[in-house]
Amino acid sequence: MTHEHSLDLELCAELLVRSDLAYVGLIGSATKAVRFRKRLLDQGISSEQVAKLVCPIGISGIQAKQPAAIAISVAAQLLQLREESTAASGEHT
Image (cartoon, rainbow, N blue to C red; front, side, top):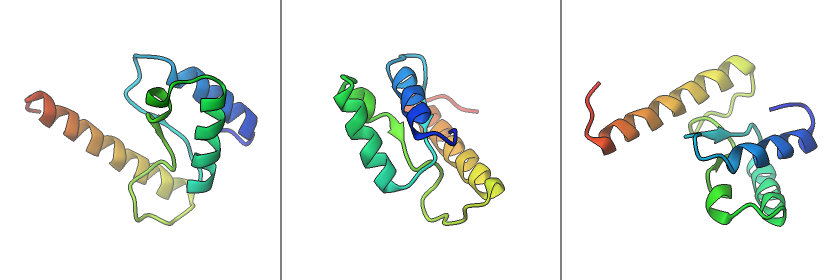
């Protein structure tokens, strides 16, 4: 999540090939997501790994672009993912 698309792409490529991350997210539009996914595939990253990229980040329906709104939306998305993971594993919090 930098101001340079080329650096964002490089970071995504490095993160997506790791097996120890549950979430790899990228601020951006649906158009940016399509572009990045194509470029990542072109770099030889598997389709399964590329499918892990969450872009745009945050819960759907939030259109605000202010940093605080994005942060709240992403925090909510991460809480949702944690709840889903907990439910799937049968754990209770």
